Image (cartoon, rainbow, N blue to C red; front, side, top):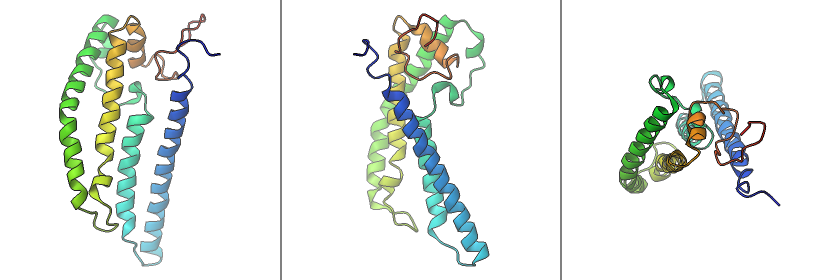
Length: 190
C-alpha cells in the first residue's frame, strides 16, 4: 500500500525517462540522416532529396518535444537577473505574474493556433509530401503542454507550500523531479 499522495510519484520520472529516450533517439536519427546525406552527396555524388527535409522536421519535433516533456523549469533559458536577487515572497509574486500572463495570453492564442494548424491539411512538404497539419502539429501540442504545466505552477504558487515551488524555480532541487507534491522526508529531502 502506498502512502496517500504518492501514487503518481513514479509516473512522472518514468515518463520523463521515456520522453528523454525519444528526444535522444530523435537527435540520433538526425545525426545519422545528416551523415548519410553528406556521404551520398560528396562521396557517391548521388544527393538524396528527402534528407534535408527530414533533418529539419525531426530537429524541430525533437526540440519542442524535449522542451515540453523533458526539461525541468530551471533548465529552460530564462531572464532571471531580477528574480535571482529578490526575497522568496517577491519571487513568488514575479512567478505568479509571469505564469498568469502566460496562461492568459497563450490560452487566448491557442484556438487560433489550432485552427491555423488544422487549416494546413491542404498543403504538403516539397519532397516527402507530408501534410503540413501533421508537420506543424508539434506547435499547438507544445504550447498545450506548457500551458498545462503553468496552470499546475499557478496552483502550487497559491497553495500553502508555495516556498517549495519557488525553490524549485530557483534550481534548488534541480536533481529532484518536477513533482512538487512528493512527500517531505525527515532528512530534509524532497
